[in-house]
Length: 281
Picture 1 (tube, one colour):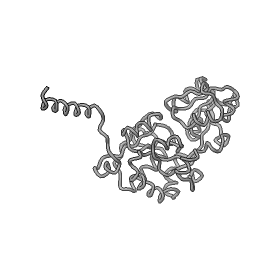
Picture 2 (tube, one colour):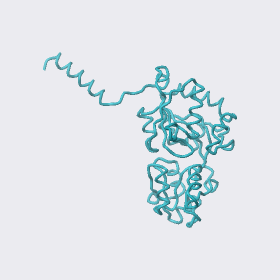
Picture 3 (spheres, one colour):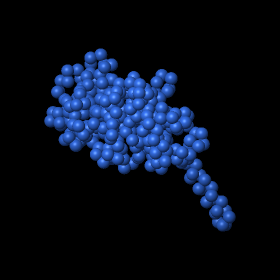
Picture 4 (cartoon, helix red, strand yellow):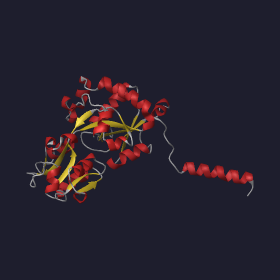
């Protein structure tokens, strides 16, 4: 093989290899300067983030994100619904630019992505059949009664359940909240774990078939702080986002915007920082 022919084949091979992978979108700042839409990734679920009947992003996390981006002069948004377990891998792979799915700031997640400063404080709860026949109120009840527990893959409740003594074989992981509800409704699970807002919304719409436990029945350390997820290489953009958040969090404008989703002043993160949450959750 001649040198020229070998070089040509090498170039062609490199080009072919490059074309076999999706092009990296580049840092968020570059997308903004190029006039490209900001892609927000989230799982369709009540309260936190979902698409409405017109395909518009709704939910309190999307609402806060869109308000803040607008204040930064950014209005071109592309929603990218995905499964819960795919949010962090999707962000890392560049399939979207910001996670707006209501993700709690946990130490294990802080090792993989960066989080904005907290936007809300939330708790978890269990979805159980009406009357709570097995008397399940917390993780220790699940462990002691050898109950079947279901939650979605990648949820913070998995870590919490194991820490409280629930065995692996008692835990079923499913793709989303829809499957959590189906498992409890069908009797395949005795309790389904989700955020309190999700559980209450499902229970309220179940016409008395299901009910929600109280988030106060779970340990205080399971109270979590929600942030928006960014790639580490977008630190400059996230810093600008946090500056806008600082001016917005807790304002009458914000409280009015999220009120339709059940959030009030009691859900404000107060003085809690992402640094603290990464170290203590």
